[in-house]
Amino acid sequence: MGGRKKQMSEIVLITISGKDQKGINCRFTSILAQYNVNILDIGQSVIHENILLGILIEIPVKGDFPAIFKDILFEGYKLSLHVDIQSAQKEHYENWVGSQGQERRIITLLGKKLTALQISRVTSVIAANNLNIDKITRLTGRISLDKNNINNTCKAPTRASIQLAVSGTPCSLKSMRGDFMKISQETGVDISFYIDNIYSKNRKLVVFDMDSTLIQAEVINELAKIAGVGEKVAAITESAMRGEIDFKESFRKRVALLKGLRAEELINLAQSLPLSDGVELVTKTLKELGYKLGILSGGFTFVGEYLKEKLNFDYLYANTLEIKNGYVTGEVTGEIIDGEKKAQLLREIAQKENISIEQTIAVGDGANDLPMITIAGLGVAYNAKPLVREKAASNIYNVGLDGLLYLIGMRDREIKRCI
Image (tube, rainbow, N blue to C red; front, side, top):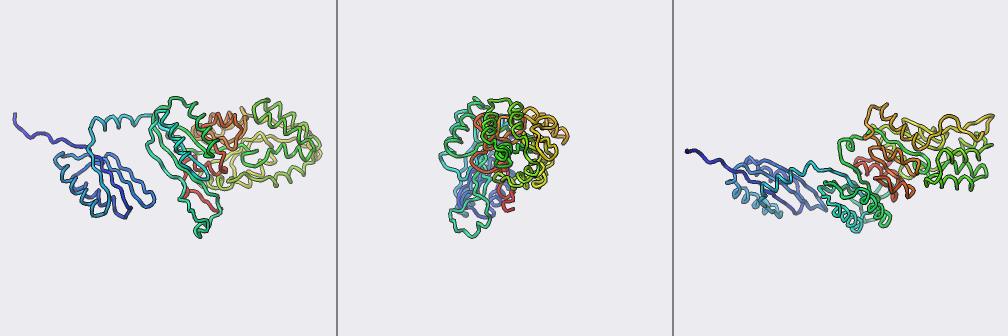
């Protein structure tokens, strides 16, 4: 039986590298367009004015390959670029396509600077868990090495951050978190590690602990100093934050020691407490992007109300000191906000905002923050106790609270650095 033999297609990978210049993509894709080529994948990066461009193509008519080969090589010659062209087996391509359904995770490295040692150790853990790095993205701007650079007009501290998109199923999530925590402690880099899904790209609500998270103090300790019982209260606070004492029990013991404080002393204290590094930047940026913000605190409302107004928070839940005749009674009114209550409130706020719990972020430092950190879509331990750092998927320890913006994938150009 006669007839024309069906033409076979061919899959080809083109890699182009060299000095970056305008119009490179246009020049090469215009050549491919002449042969009705299909683009199966394309990626590009520019590092120190040098480009690396990769194009995976399907040539509908296999016989066109020699002409395409010649035209692409000649164009590279004219532009002084190195061009590598390799045929790819269809079987390998189909296997690669089939792997696209694998689990995907985002690993973010954040520090005052990034070193080869830090990246080497993190990527060693990735390889040991049989994960593949699909993409590396720089989130922070290029850092000038000239301290007198007149273009560095913003007073914001230097940050260095990259994001790695990885695929595959880890051998042990628990082991990976432990390894990352060790790397963080030993090399001074913060590491975030979470599932990449539709929710991770659509966060809507961020809730923060207050004491030692939004502010650089434990308010109850500061009140205790004023009341002359500082050492007693501090010892109970530390034990509670380490998870050694039930929070409600320890809270009642500490509040009882505050009996007799004058009410005006509370207001003076609230206005004098130092904010944590990066607080104003992170809250201003998140609000401008449409996030809802909440304070879920085991501390006190008189500080929370001050911060809510100052930083434009949407929600505040904290404990209310009972005051009678202008003095603290040593009791609190209403239900005590402990760890379980924080988790319950996070769920309630998410429901009120009509969002999934996966679209929430929770940030805290103490053991009583773990319940909300573990149920949130992204749980972040900030300057946290060892117990909390071990259990949280993401940690900020070496930079300020504005590091949260990088952990959720924002870039320098999207962050208002000067406020």
